[in-house]
Image 1 (cartoon, rainbow, N blue to C red):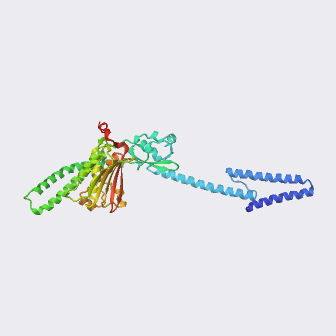
Image 2 (cartoon, rainbow, N blue to C red):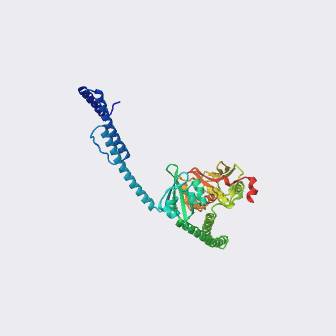
Image 3 (tube, rainbow, N blue to C red):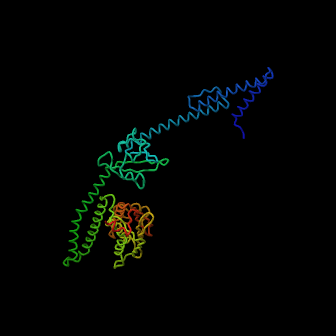
Length: 438
């Protein structure tokens, strides 16, 4: 291995120094003493440079250099250069940290960094405004000791989904949205937003829809009654038959929309969790599927596959809405030559209701939107078949009240499968019916 030039130069200097001491010893005598003295001077020079190197490594000011070349001069110069760069980086990082602090302080959302034990490591000024946190008091405390809402405590132990909304601890009638994001080494970043305005607007929207739906239902009932009378009246000119039939169809469609709006508003306005009444799911599914048995109207074949006799604990009306809407949608969007299969089974995760069809399917980019209110994959076909655009929205909200989730698998032109997954805590066996009912 070839030595660097600086080490070759240093070894050359040491060799020359000892040779000079040897020659002086031969000239004046006492060679050993000359060599010892030369080594002592070299050792003192080396210790001085080691001391300067130690000072340089400690960062004690600028190190004076008495040599302009050689190993030690180059080493000390390199250290001084590294220190200069480090100081420059430190100033840059401090400036960046100040900018980050100023930017987080300007945010309206609160940001809180938590360690794996849910202890607070840092938070921005908005956390003080929204949660009343104090840097001198709350850093190092567990956040669930400061924010004790039961929903937040449950979410903190299992942060699944898009977050939760809880009442504000600082503002009466205020609401906060909290989302936990994985951060750093097993840390979490809590993003907290004030959603009071959105919640008030949502409440106003629900109230308006509920009131409008109830107010419109009576006039539509009257209009429908008169239209039925006109349709049955033999004295009405024959040329009016088609317009009256179309008006009846539109009145029926508006009635279905109002009925679904009222149902959706009722589910949204109800308590967060559904009741725990005993619901015989196999019997309910048999009744629903029987409605689509072969009839005069061409429709796809509906087959029920009962793989378990398990029942559910929940709201019978809401569970009926879930089952009916899924089966009804599958039948509407499947051609008469196709088929609809309904599965009821239990898994390790809980209970599953799966409705699979061979219908028109859903484009991949629209699957995430089909549970929105009034969203239709094919608006023209949906209106022609009497759809309201609210069925899947009802399914989604009713499932959430039962702690369930909706999974959608679909391929355009080849059919869809809608799977409702209910938690194990909602499953009830036949033997527990009496106890559940009581």
